[in-house]
Amino acid sequence: MPANETRVPILSEADIVTARQKGRSLAKELGFEGADLTLIAAAISEVSRNIVEYARSGEIVLTKATNGSGHGLCVVARDEGPGIPDVAQAMQYGYSTGKGLGVGLPGAKWLMDDFDIVSKAGFGTTITMKKWLPENAKQPAHVRTVARRF
Image 1 (cartoon, rainbow, N blue to C red):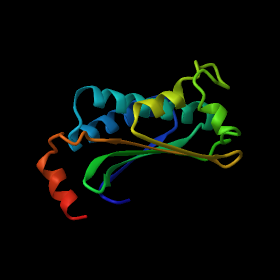
Image 2: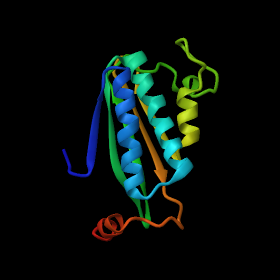
Image 3: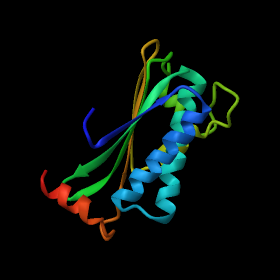
Image 4: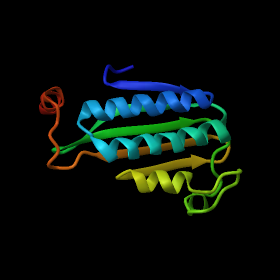
């Protein structure tokens, strides 16, 4: 596992809390503040909860993200569950195959800056979400130093 990567196995409700805490902690280290920390934690909770409810097991992978001069957080939610037969329908606000309100995936997309979902029925789902630091955000010194090496 690369040193700049945090993996959180998702098997139970308790793991959702762990993923949320670790995501929030890494986001804070990267320079996110206030409401952005809450948005990131909420998005991680939503995709983690889907893993527990529909796939039973999976993982959340947290990494630093770069895009040119931009920096942020990348969250990958991965499982080998039943997959999503109709991703477009699942992304509609209010649609749910479970007992939820149908705001999980659309809500996570709304909370983050970038959102990509790849799913195949019978093979699982991978969701990649990114949140970018505002251009005027002051990054901690260790992040600026790492970013210059790329």
